[in-house]
Amino acid sequence: MPRLLRAVDITKIYPKKVDPALTRSCLSIGPGEIVALVGHNGAGKSTLLDILGGLSRPSSGRVDISVPSREIGWCPQREIVDWSLTVEQNIALGLELRQKTRRAERSQLLASIAETMGLIPFLRRTAETLSGGELRRTQIARAIAGEPTLLLLDEPTTGLDPAGIDVVFDHLERRRQGGASAVISTHETSRFAAYCTRVIAMDTGVIVADEPAGAFAKRGDDPDDLWSAYDAIRRGGAAA
Ligand SMILES: Nc1ncnc2c1ncn2[C@@H]1O[C@H](COP(=O)(O)OP(=O)(O)OP(=O)(O)O)[C@@H](O)[C@H]1O
Image (cartoon, rainbow, N blue to C red; front, side, top):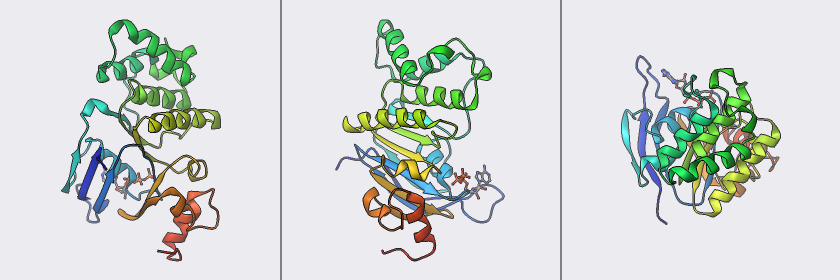
């Protein structure tokens, strides 16, 4: 299977820290996957995504990315919007980065993304005037603008209402069917069970499971909540 991304033995030790935030982690992402990254607070999810997205360098190990950087849609946990830009300008940045559309088509595409993400009423507002959920939707809109091949989304659904979460996943599923992939960290493990194709579970910087979502869900008592399986793994009671 062709790979979009491969991480080999990546370890991250932050300055002035003794314990690694990430320990010898390996993973590959192929086309057509929606990968849920689950783990407790501080498990290393953001550290892993930051390294995969090129925001931070591993202390050792390497990441091979087979897609051009403009083909990566990135939604980090910490907001990196330009506060003085409007919602419209933020989405336009995503489209310009991917360079897939002619200028004349951009306004139509921009409107369609804004419509999808429920952002039409906010297009002319600057990021600093938005609510948390509106800001999150703006970040997602920018990440998905231009339909990148690989999406790295760090807790994208935090602050979104259930309808907003459905919109994001409907979009991801449509892109997945076209061969795109997404890696998404989350604590909303009940909503994710139905949507993801694969689960990577992390515990204290270590990948403790990487398997198809169906197999992962079966490890727990509640197949509709990935946390149940995650808990079972941490308690050591899961089937291998
Ligand atoms: N810049 C940093 N400097 C020092 N330590 C850090 C830094 N960023 C993260 N850490 C530490 O690395 C570990 C992993 O953090 P990380 O943010 O990757 O976890 P996470 O799984 O994303 O957590 P959460 O679910 O709370 O967002 C934690 O112990 C955290 O305190």
